Length: 324
Ligand SMILES: NC(=O)c1ccc[n+]([C@@H]2O[C@H](COP(=O)([O-])OP(=O)(O)OC[C@H]3O[C@@H](n4cnc5c(N)ncnc54)[C@H](OP(=O)(O)O)[C@@H]3O)[C@@H](O)[C@H]2O)c1
Image (cartoon, rainbow, N blue to C red):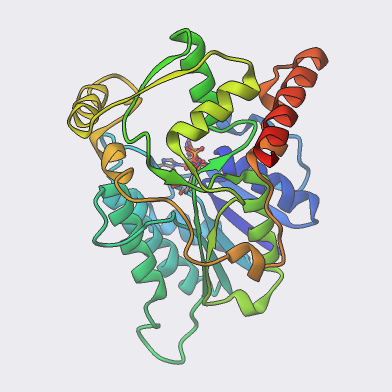
């Protein structure tokens, strides 16, 4: 297939574009900055280009000759010139319009668990609004309309994630002491490789047109549990100080003012609802997702084989104690 992947340079995108190319697809990846796409340059069937994906004419050019469009573009925090509304809702509307005009057969859209027009955070509300507009029937019955498939993953982990790597970095800097807002929020962390496998499986299945897949890893864990597991596998000290909600709110307010917004009020509000699945999208696609213990030792042990072996031993130790 000829596939255009928006957001193809990010954490999920780099993994997905690589897998699509290795599976024999030809992939076009627009970016705002080619330097972000270094890892994709080595792939023969990947065409990288600089483009403004918010421009409808540019989208038309990008989608020309494509069988499918995958939209992974997303932000955790709004910035000047990139509101949640513009990035999560208006862009998918433009993608749909441009795909319709270019007679693209399929759109695969990345949403998030909890996306809902009435959710507590801007992040989830803007994603929910996009789902609603993508599910709406074509304005003119019988006119060409791409088949839409939507994915709603829980939090995603993998070698280049900003979850476990950031937590490990924080624990290193604070000698293991971590004040944590919403420590009891529940997730089912899902491996990036399994998320990409779901996209590839859906592409190969015409029956996935019109479907929504919730994607969760095999274990439900609290945020504090994810921190503890990350610390244990990475061999780091860990003492979590759960923050009462009022203090967590204040933490979001203050950290949202720092450069790079390491945590924000909107992030705090997203954590108000559990990020766990109501149905098993992986099972419907014939995929058995991997748990954190199987994957974390492959990258949290550092680059040397000794460190990786230690991480593996610690993960096995934890698995045995959980079994017992
Ligand atoms: N990671 C998770 O745990 C998780 C969980 C649930 C859902 N998701 C969703 O999965 C998708 C991918 O997440 P990710 O972790 O791979 O994100 P990421 O690493 O931050 O990558 C984001 C991608 O979106 C593009 N992008 C960001 N802001 C943009 C803007 N204003 N205009 C145009 N392009 C923009 C970036 O492209 P360039 O910088 O190259 O232009 C980049 O390729 C997102 O929609 C996210 O909401 C992620």
